[in-house]
Image 1 (tube, rainbow, N blue to C red):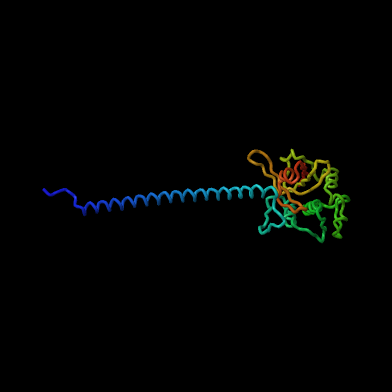
Image 2 (tube, rainbow, N blue to C red):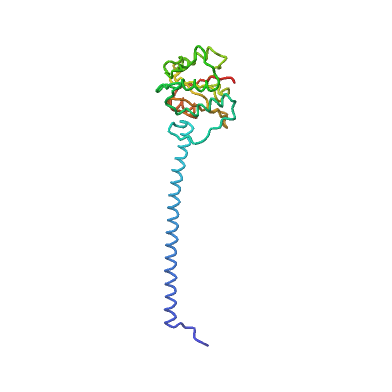
Length: 246
């Protein structure tokens, strides 16, 4: 029978093969460990990036509906108000076209206090007709307009005296507010009116709450949240509305 004893050469070949296998296993393990570590690092890095991106997105989403659009925003889209009556559509179209204006040859412009002048212009575009108490001076001098045309408190007094033009609503009556209505603010709850705008959106949320957005002048505003205005911009402020019949 042939001998089964291994020669020195075969033993050396076997040892070499074992050594090669050992090196391969060690190298493979190191490669796997490095790959796993790198993968974990990349996952951690990606997770941090996603978290930061998510936070930035959330911050942007939270800020946009509150503060509304700024005068510096580019208006490239075409606004469509065809869902509303002709009067309200004309009012919104005028407001959208002129909310960033800082001068007017026809109506003039009141620096830092043009909100009622602008609101009155939108009501004129809606179809309102001037009378002895609410009118503008065609010279274009805004200081020469009627008080009710340029003063928030005077406009309140005027509308209170003319229920045929508008009906007063409190902030607890948001369910009766409609797009095109007038919104007024008393920033310090002192009893007068400090700011005036027009309602651009009324939305009922899933929880039943109602979100109201508005447009105005000084500062130029489109789709600003009433809630943001009375809690962030002027904490403690109070909002009021004037419901305008068709």
